[in-house]
Image (tube, rainbow, N blue to C red; front, side, top):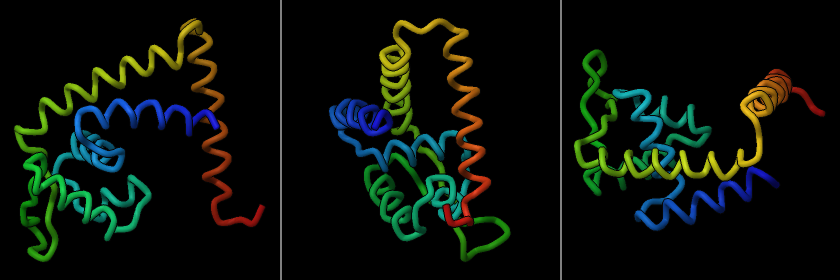
Length: 134
């Protein structure tokens, strides 16, 4: 419920700069892992390679990403940000900072640390049980 509301809030903001959630998450991944392959990006974003490919294709067409042949495997390509992505990344960073301020309003630094620690435990519990039937 909380995650859905946070996504709606952020989606509305990124929509104003003309990109979708899939596009901004892909840009963020490539920013943090320049030269990642389509497969790596798909794994990080927990989406199919085909879906990641469509998003990457769109961002390449928009001039924000580029594919380059992988040096050790000519069949694979790596994905890189172009200079055109820099202003978008800057806007996304500003939006994210503003949304964090909204989400954590009224909480002390200690409360935020505790929340992050507890959510980390929940995440670890869920990911450890991924293959089990609950």
